[in-house]
Amino acid sequence: MKLDLNQDGILNKLVSIRRDIHANPEFGFQETRTAGRVAAFLTACGIPVTTGVGGTGVVGTLKRGTSNRSIILRADMDALKIQETPAHTRAHGSLNPGYMHACGHDGHTTMLLGAAQVLAAQGGFDGTVQFVFQPAEEWGKGMLAMLEDGLLERFPASEAYGLHNVPGLAIGKFETRAGAFRSAEDNFTINIRGKSVHSARPQQGRDALVAAAAVITALQTIISRVITPGEQAVVSCTDIKVPGIRNVICGEAEISGDCRSFSPQVSALIERELRTVAENVSRAHGCEALVEYTREFVPTVNHPELAMEVGRVLTGVFGVDAVDANARPQSGSEDFGQLLLKIPGCFVNIGNGATESLHNSAYDFNDEAIPFGVEFFATVARARLPLTSR
Ligand SMILES: [Zn+2]
Ligand SMILES: [Zn+2]
Image: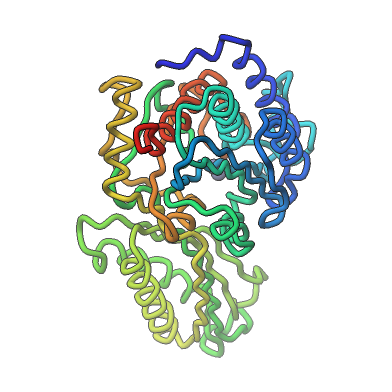
């Protein structure tokens, strides 16, 4: 590391901001308090701020020098609808019952604020940094809302960079890769319609529950028999709803679930096969299937050259052992992928040490990661907006 955040007490201030945001979690598109804190912090750094971008999104625009080059550094602000585990009540525990920062977006927001402060105070770059704080990452809707509100027209940028903390990855470690790094998420619902009848007279009905069981089993072959070996994808049935009357043969059943993939082609193949299996297996049981298939997250696809450049730059700052620039693609989804559909860029994992897993009710972002995230953002800004370009 090259940056010393202990100088001027920056780190202590960032830790207290992180804990304040943790204590006041806000759900997607309702991040008014968080956005207010972000805007006030940026303003105090002398950075011009625009609020209300795509709902509760905030953009800070920091210019230095004369270059026309511009990049986006992005963080997410939203919390989850999860009750923080009482046994893990902490001094900065959630004051908002039923909601908590279980994904560490409090940490991401804080790390980007730290980078904004460092870059505003110390410069070291030539061009414009757009600090983008997005709402509603967990829904996969916040970045789209900012883009539809003219993010790239109002705050032009030619590249974008973001990060997510990873429990279990050591503090100070980074991972990224060229190409697809986070999966797409598709959701599906299969409504199977049969005919309900007295449970003693099955021959007079059409059992939607038996059909649903056969559909669920058959769907398991999409990954094992349809997707090319070597491609990564997941098809998960996660819920089944039936009327549930003990002496009535089930006349309707609803299966829902979610699919992960890393390319539009594989996503399209999964949808086609899922419809074929659900409709035809149901028909074999004398039932009818209606399939709804929606795309919630696009895959997050890193630009090959920029991912290599980020790997190189991070290695220069943190050392060769700290950076894995060829990490495996991961089957979680990330709203940052929407931004990478518009402009090239790179998303990285940052180690969060031995914390609970993400979306666990006992999770708490590890403040030890803050300096590394601050330095990641500041380093990338300086590398991509070099002073030598003048
Ligand atoms: Zn999450
Ligand atoms: Zn997250």
